[in-house]
Amino acid sequence: MIQPLAVAMGDPAGIGPEIIAKAWAARTHEALPPFFAVGDVRAFARVWDGPTAAIDDPSQAAARFDDALPILTVADAGAIEPGAPDLSGAHCALQALELAVGLTRSGAAGALVTGPVAKAQLYAIGFTHPGQTEFVAERCGVSADSAVMMLAGPTLRVVPVTTHIALTDVPATLSIDLIAAKARTTLRGLTKNFGIAAPRLAVSGLNPHAGEAGSIGLEELAIIAPAVAMLQAEGLDVVGPLAADTMFHPRARAQFDAALCMYHDQALVPIKTLHFDEGVNITLGLPIVRTSPDHGTAFGIAGQGVAEPGAMIAAIRMASEAIGHRAVYSACS
Image 1 (spheres, rainbow, N blue to C red):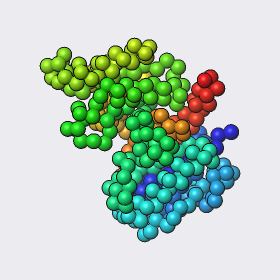
Image 2: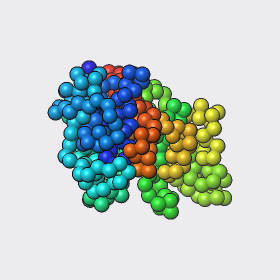
Image 3: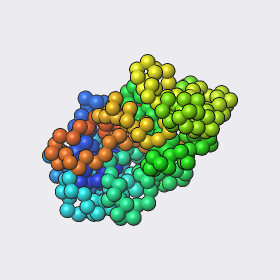
Image 4: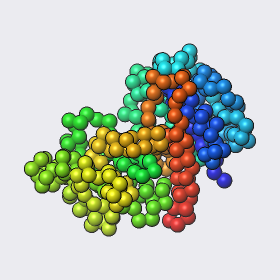
């Protein structure tokens, strides 16, 4: 039996509480598995008038799920004002994340779904990780380089080799070993979390037109092509480097199961263009399943009742599906 999923609230002043509540309200129509929120119950009351049920333990969530949104309460988030983040809310968001990770690692929760946080607020209270992905990886005993951030939608999955660094730092950060390591983790994750037995990976170039044989940059010849050749020699289905501007039209997407891109926007622009309201961030390479909606806190619309819950619903569904694929993977391993 799959344990209920733990959904960390995110910043209480953002749209996290609203989209979690709306996901619960759509539970029957969307055939969602039981889940419980982790956060301050008052943050939900500020943006939603539906039923909630305070729980003391994840084991109580399933019994309450049909009638109310189960909420495992963490410390007081202070004066909650939707759209107005503050340091008390950041502390609450971090405590919710910490508790939800711990419950998932212990097996008390079946998977971890994280709501959107405000990094600037977290940094102000001493948070030292680039993002939630790296925090969750550390708590799971996995190095940041071994954890892979995949953004997934109905017709596209992308992985950025480098994430939250300045564009000017990308060329010096790329290496043959880094690209190969991210590719291997991605391919294993496609099998383990998505049930794809023989995954196919497309690798982008860094420069326009994939460098035009060295006339517009040398990274393709010196770094990316050798990494692809190494992976192919291992028997992996990998192609590239490909020109990024022609990788994402429908016919091209049909040729691969995921695209490995060299930097943040090269990966996130196409996925958010195609699947903004249903994109999911799933972390590969972890001992637990972790997903998140592929959008931010949206403070500008928080508390107005207009937040679209599609990405949160997709994140909960993908987490549940990944648990099932992992069970099959483990049985066959």
